[in-house]
Length: 486
Image (cartoon, rainbow, N blue to C red; front, side):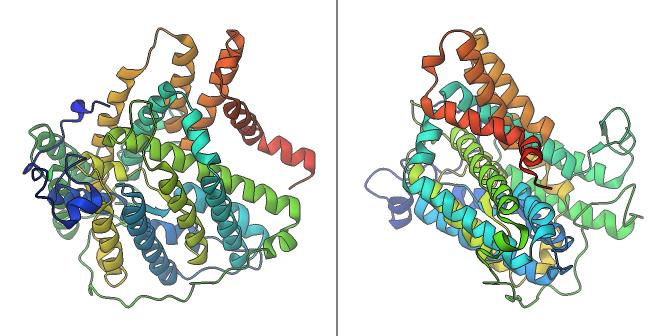
């Protein structure tokens, strides 16, 4: 796979064959055309791009109440989120040898907080997360998950990469407040009320412009340098300018202020608070099964799309469109999802923000060791995690999104049997804010269009099954009503 369009920064070439050290041999640095410095830099960049999850995940889970009215402790959730991400990311690096960091999935934690918790206790909701992870592991170990991924046509895999590029760019723009939603027309607008009139917008623009300038000039560490510089600017602005805590001009989840103390002892009180099967009794079998189905489908296809997209961008996809070592990667992803339930931080999944590290040059699991190490450090430096605002880090997602869009050139737009499903895959991801929805729209439309063209035999039998599952998924509310589920 050619990735010359990404114009990644270069540093010292890998050592010649025969002079490789233990890190080179274990992670195959030379074989993947990378260096220790580039991997570590990419891992640090990935951490900064996704560090917001340490703060955002506790806000989402801690802001919800379970069926008994109980809430989860924010400090404990912060500790568990960092711990879970650190372990899952390091294991993926060592076992999967891929630059894909993991942490609590935003879509999945919303299901846990707003669909599972209202009908069962927190331990029971986390029990369903563990079961979800076990199911995904079984699908990986039996080869079913890999068969499904390999059954997807190469063109749709490229479309998934393009869609993820558009998706993460939008995520970056929205997280930074550079694009905001509105209840009136238009649904999306630039800045606040259609105007860029805030200091956070200035920081975002500064970070993005600096990042683009350094990157196109192939400056090593371009993304990381820009994040650090923009964070420094944000701290200066926050210290010297008037920034409201909420509303117009707000920074969002992270306010760039130096904390009073950089050190805080971790609180592991939520670890192991799991009731595996209690949710089926508390909420009812059908209700719990619907929640579990949603968790599995979201975890399965969100991770699948992200893995394919990042692997494609990192040049880890072979000429058949397959990812070497995919079985190990998928197994670790499933185990990590279950571990997220054990830590009560919700299911872990591969983060699209890993693309920021890939854009910085990461190609192996060594980058994950750096990312995991920084997550481990944040267990004790949780206050410091609140320093980097989204406006400083989010431009990395916009830049990498632009690089991932280069995959669109690999699509045959003259073949409507591919062009339409590819288009739906691409637009559904950002327009519905869901990787899963994009994959589902692409696969269902691909199967139907191929059948309409009389080429239904060209569709792998597994894809017909997956397409049928997605039809159920999209019509889940109707299914719930038919089954009498409230």
